[in-house]
Image 1: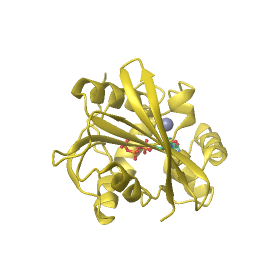
Image 2: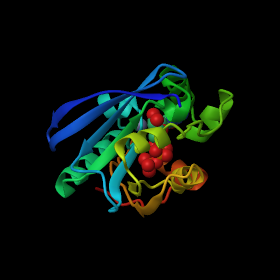
Image 3: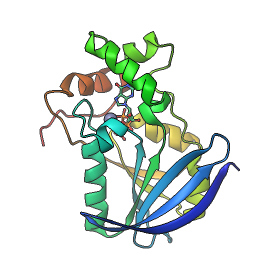
Amino acid sequence: MTIRYIESSKLPTPWGIFSMHGFEDTANDKEHVVLSMGNLEGEEPVLSRIHSECLTGDALFSLRCDCGAQLQAAMHRIAQEGRGVIFYLRQEGRGIGLLNKIKAYNLQDKGADTVEANEALGFGADMRDYSILREMLEHLNIHALKLMTNNPRKVKALNDLGVNVVERIAHETGRNPHNAKYLETKKGKLGHLLEGKED
Ligand SMILES: Nc1nc2c(ncn2[C@@H]2O[C@H](COP(=O)(O)OP(=O)(O)OP(=O)(O)O)[C@@H](O)[C@H]2O)c(=O)[nH]1
Ligand SMILES: [Zn+2]
């Protein structure tokens, strides 16, 4: 058990008032945030987003990726349903960290794709670990997820951990001229289910 629940508060947003729950991973001092709305308990699967930190996309308006648009769309959808949860996991850069992601972006500026850049830096294409979710789900009394994602590998990784993902909900948004090649690489090399539709 490395996840410690710390405290909860309200988080008013443009889409509605979420509850914000703070967790600490005592194994590496990472601080994770969960946003929730409505009553998560009970048998009905919970509309969910498992979002990996992307400082550039989530906070700095970067158009290199689709993260910011996906986060906003998830908040909007949960607010519309009145019930759901967003796990904001501090796994920046698919687990390689912010500074390594900037190194990877530098290689992409010179022509590498997102996978080649990670590999040139000595990392796997995706270094994320979702195992901390189990303790968070237990704490929140969540039994089954309807997961907003385009990434079937994420669904498989979760199911392998014993997390009950009963449905995948396509979550495609935020395509623009700056991230079109990046999204094609995610589709071609990382297996993301993307139809290529414009917003
Ligand atoms: N290493 C690296 N990480 C990136 C790059 N672009 C975005 N990221 C990170 O990728 C993570 C998001 O993963 P994605 O592959 O976009 O999406 P996903 O979470 O696997 O799938 P979805 O649920 O469909 O969003 C965030 O942590 C971003 O910081 C990149 O070019 N290189
Ligand atoms: Zn991003």
